[in-house]
Structure formats: C-alpha cells, structure tokens
Length: 96
Image (cartoon, one colour):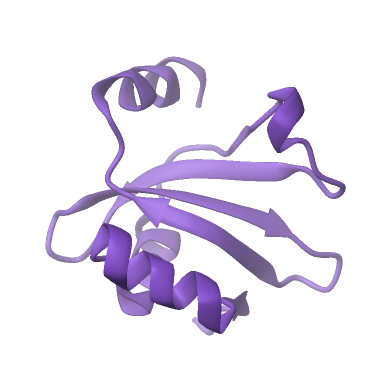
C-alpha cells in the first residue's frame, strides 16, 4: 500500500534529531494503526483542516504518536511524531 505522506525537510530533520524518529517508522505506524483517530481540539493547535493524531507501533514494536493533517487529495501532512507519554496513551486508549 502506497502512502501519500508529506514531510517537509524541516519536520524530517526535527523528527530525527529531536525524537530519533525516521520517516520509515512514521510510515510503519500508519500501516500498523488498528484504532481510530483523535482530533487535537486545543485552541493553540487548531488548524483547518483539523490536526489529527493516533498512537501505533512500528514494525519493531516502538510506540509512536503521529500528528498530522489530512489533506483533501488523500495525502497526509506530518506535523510531528514522537514516543507518547503515559497520559497520551491513556487518552488514546479511552477515546479512540
């Protein structure tokens, strides 16, 4: 399955340098996701289209939170990805 991901050079560098996350791991999480998506409704993070997120495992079992915007043409613009904290995991488990 081909994914249409948009990851800017700046975001890709931040993912790798700050969070040690590769583009391949982001792709794996999209393919491995088995629960729903949540919308980030916090005022400071509101976007149009809305900012969405999910938590999934990479093929190696690493848990990542993927934050993105779904564009009209079926592409996903990645905003960030990182290992979630316990509270984020609890929220996702409860509401997804």
